[in-house]
Image (cartoon, rainbow, N blue to C red; front, top):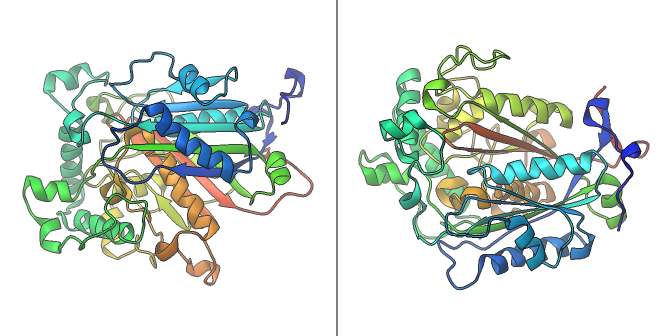
Length: 430
């Protein structure tokens, strides 16, 4: 096991040179609406053991860990310490983050930075979503959001998601056809993904997906599931020693004001939010630019995208925020079949939140990284993407996105299948 470096040897990200980070492995629990027969500790232990084994490591090799959760029924206050102890990882530092749905991405950002600074060589990111109900929408009230005026207006997550989708439709002149097409495509992918919640049965009909009723709306938006996830990250040096494939990971996190009213022309110091409204995605754009810059890619290099599509038109707006389409053009992009397996940018190839299912902090980011990891390894089965630009080969560059708390938090991650650098173990951004 590699030892910690002294402070004098630790490069800073601002120096322009820092160690590259490799995704060693990823693991996601099987599809289940609710898991009531085991404790959350054992639920996490299962995916941790699987990921550790896939990375050719031992649990004692992990030097730093983080766990994301968004649970109201986990009573422990120091969850990181509890989980580290349960996994036999004490006394290593283990960080716990409860920051809505993208908490897994924020944990990944934290561990990425620990490895990128050279302080550690092996890190673990865990995520847990194991509520005591069968329908996550039952718990989707305003609880946990700092939104005084939103409280007074009575906005829940459901209210906000519906309002935002309707606002997007009104602004750009869409009806529900793009949302229905998005949902149908997600179900097509999910029927080819054994890890998806909705991976069997007939595909929804166009009539069902277009129905103007609460049932139709539910068909076009996310369902919920319990999930435990694990990502293992290592330095490039350690990855070479372990004989792992060169799959580089970069992560960036940004946010915008939480209160809905501040999503309109907010006067911020950096002028990021000026002239923006609820349909715009400035935080995604900020995070994406940083992640793309570190990875050395442009938006035109992306082969596959996994984006958060919890509510109506969320996924479409995420594609616009990432720069894959221009603002307002996402609906047309979907209707033209560009998110399909043979499209310009196959999207949510695992089935997305609509069919793979939403899992809150337990996996909304990690599960997307997991799917991209499988795609880069050529192990996605019937949904394996073969980009035209690769002449029938497997994809090389993928992006993942997750958001939370009324779209105020956004995380973007890039996975890139590259080649080992023979002369330099570090990124050079200078």
